[in-house]
Length: 279
Length: 329
Image 1 (cartoon, rainbow over the protein chains, first blue to last red):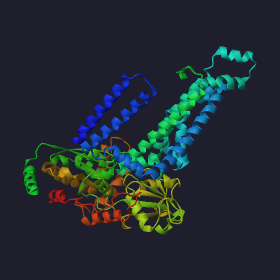
Image 2: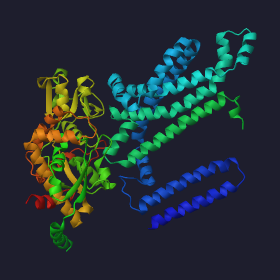
Image 3: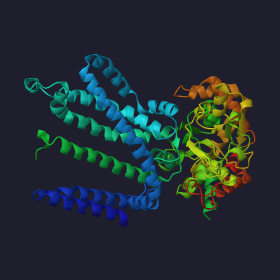
């Protein structure tokens, strides 16, 4: 009962703090504090409810149990992170986005490809990952290469479509201006059309970050070596060590946010000229 | 004191039960002949005769029956003893109330052409292993052979998490894989590999046997005489279903096919499976043999490690004869 009261108290306290924060004139620390207060409140309520109602740890472990597991299994989590994020997701992301970018440029240059390749890209994008993954494991083996292949398939299409769209963003007047300067295809491309395409390209890159992580983790459900975040999640559920599952989810959330944040930061640097970046 | 009251109440309930009681059974795997006894009991009306309205929930690769029962999604589950004991140590107080599978079908198959003839040849090999609770006997076996599981070298093997199929062996991605006598072994044979080309290691024969499909309920539920009585009738009807399936294999296979909502199973394969599963259930009248239980526990305790965290201490109260004593007499 005490813990349930604790949960209610934590909720009320968090609510009070955030309401009073919202009334303050906005400043950098207010906009930082509000989500932190929210997050801490959520954890406190979670802890209180799990303990108060005696919820079995097999259904939902308490945040403190998860934190204890994270610190106890740091080595294991790091090895899984390297295997899944650095080897599987990142390499697949680089290959998939890089290939999609190059092919988008080619498609833009040769309308013939646009008619042939875009429908194929569309088709590949429509394949469900749970159908692709076992096949790619069969082709590329159990290790991270097959996971990277799944990621390539997943990130390729959003990147391709966005880049193709972006390359059409420069309008006719701007292209005419380049022509009056006697600029050729490549200098028009590099000085005008690619910069214009960048907001679209970054859209594709940002969508790809989450897709890459999902793809790499889910692909490990269909055969893997005995390391990796997806392997750990699926087998730990079977062993009922749910605290380890949540620890992996925590790492995945952290990695995903950091990856996305990194891309958003790069976007700010590259497309500083775009109206959406004005504050 | 509570026992006497419970006993008296049980007797009362035994005569009072009339309206059909609902029982939900959560299977360990998809609808297939591995669970023929339960489907037969339902289809032939054995449950009905006992005044039970039984719902059979199929499982699958992403369903842990132990989690389902603790979440209230089932009254009784089918699972392997290693997984049941592991769950017990993690705060899910499962109790084995009946053991329809006397022996186990888990084995390791290697291709002769890879040069593997005996366990001494395992070092440096790649081995496919199932997880989700099925890895415990493998780790116990490797520990007794003195082999590490962190990579192929002179004293270790590379372990792959094998999906539930025989593909890795057929495609040469693994030297040895896990199979069940009643399922994946047949897949290998159907893929065109003859039994002569295979080396088979049966876990039971090697002394790493672990009890497979048993019926488990939550300890707290057993304190309720009404629930206990329901389980007595459930076990009695289920065992009747198993014995019927053993004797009428073709009919049992057809019943399984009829109950397969996914439509994925084929009659030939189910017929084969019924035959193989019948060999596993043949020696059991439903009551757990404490010696088999002891072997499972000792195998698990012989290889406690970080990768193999099944159980770390001798479990207590993990099985009972209370239900089977009542059901089978």
